[in-house]
Length: 76
Length: 206
Image (tube, rainbow over all chains, first blue to last red; front, side, top):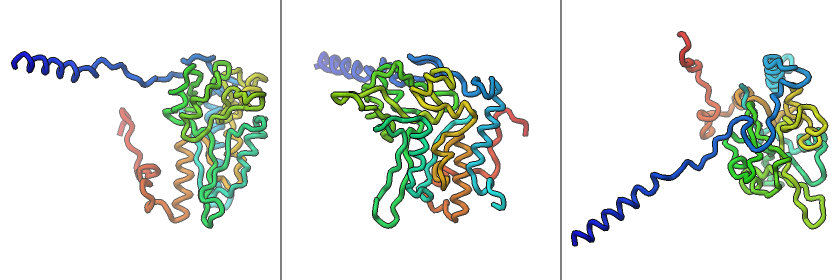
């Protein structure tokens, strides 16, 4: 009886820790690290020539231009 | 750094399909491929609502997770792009995408399914910016010209907003508050609630 209990306990212990060896299944993606070619930054091209601040300023102005309450004169 | 997103306002969309046309024209998309389309709920019923749907450039994109050849990447602006030279056109991304964004050209014989094509947020692809190869494979790179996606900029009623998530969320918040709506919507505070005073940045002097 004791032997059966010991075997059952050992089996339960093995089963309960079986999940501890699992590896993380989520892939962490990093910029440029994938199978394909690395991409350029949008400000590296011709109009901005590497000027990141100018690019961000231009895009931000475009972003805010979508708010017609602000864009159209006379709006509140 | 900006986190680029689209926001579709169902109260404003008039189902004109201007966004679809702008996208098609801007990138010279072939027949049968629709990077963007307008979906109407309860079509024909009074009070029907339409929203413009394309790749939503998910923060944790399922297409990236399931791609067997790892052809997807995410730019520093949060735009999900892919390399067509690596894509094998298997269609796993189509099944994984909750928006049905991945498209497959089927203009060949015997039901040929070509390499996947999808909305690039007008950010081109991994080819050199403004190159002929980039335009041919991915369309025009407006983001590198300092412009926003053609669909959002073309939208007549500004139902479709595109750009930095924080900025367009602010525009939408102002718009809804001007309509006299907002607080009664479940989850409004979580999604669009704005603290009166911004939280102190770690390490900032008070």
